[in-house]
Image (cartoon, rainbow, N blue to C red):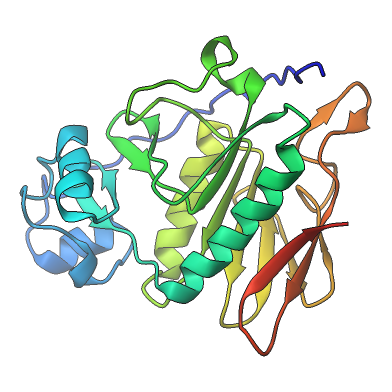
Length: 243
């Protein structure tokens, strides 16, 4: 089976932000600059504004905590059992579909990706087509500079609207095609094809790669079938099945 070559979208210019912690006078300033995240998600060691990718890797390896690196500050990701179960179902569904199709790779909730210098994001689920991988291979480095085709974020109580707005802007500035925001509490999936344009899906509606054209295409046909999101009211878990 031939692999699908996919030309990634060019990265757009992203306006530099003030380095988190560099000019903040109060803790409130720092939290505001990070998107209004709760204080218990911001690590103070190393000091905000001084953290590096090496620190991020150290926290993950020695403490088992998943952090994102935002302009020199480590911000912990929040994922409970429910969110983890939802992400696992989505990974299983996409991974099963991709298994015999040689379209790319799917990463889980510890797959750190460098989107820009001083910006490392760790999506709950991400799909990267072979065309976006250097030489068609997944790099062995712990934090590669890769931009996925699709990112899935499973929302938790600790996520703020400002944080998500900032994250969406960064994702699409980096060159992503589609972002799914899965909300277990409202049992909905918001499909973004840009930072501002989105479609809200719920219950028995169909999640395609995006609300319009499929997010992976090759040889004039869709390489990924639509996925049906079956949001169970009893279990509170999103079960994704290939149609």
